[in-house]
Length: 315
Image (cartoon, rainbow, N blue to C red):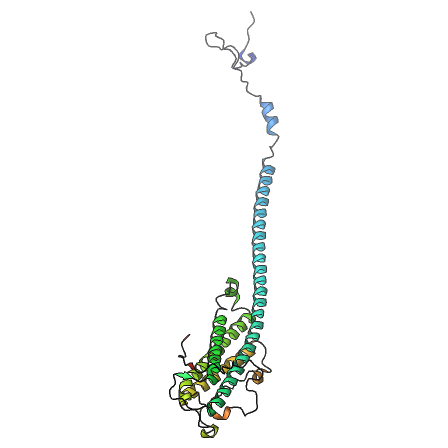
């Protein structure tokens, strides 16, 4: 009989028969890796660090791309706003320059109305010197009917021009309101239109003063040109009315000068735009001269008889 010692016994595996009661256990299907296999696998390090660094670089690249895209969009928006502002500035400047050229035409129109008013007052003064006095101011003689209507037409045309010029601020668009204080042309246009409005209003108010004096002039006419001193007011004006017309004349001269300066006509504005509405007898032109200076004269009313004198504010 052979006896085996403990040192010679082989180690039991889990899938072998158990020493308890001599019973055997079926294998479980799982095998524990040997120590040599685990040592072999541990010799290799999985590349986790390169993967993480690559992921970080990808995330950083994406963030940088988004930031650059946002900066590019903001730059494009800023550039577009700058270009739009420049375009509006150019359009605003050209529009106001066209308005300034229109102001030059309005200056010429005012000059024509000014000469017509001077001519009409001069001619009415000469007619009133030789016309017989009227018993009442209810009728106007046929020699002066055309002149009275002429004065009314001048006043109405001056009021229409002032109204048209006052609509300039209403017709402006939102770029004009945005750039009205920024462009030089806009400032000059605003000054020119405001001064022209004052000039036409002054012309209309002076014409109204002449119309109001027709009744008193008809009652006191017919005494000849030598009956009035050169310092006396013209027949269509009394002393308060003469002072008012003189004040309006100064206002109109100042407004016309401002308009001419805004339109770059400063070199000859003092010679062309000189208001000379007759206020005193000494300002009446001499006989034989054309007081209208080529402008349209009042229509003659000869043969139609006297006409009723209407109120100055009647339409």
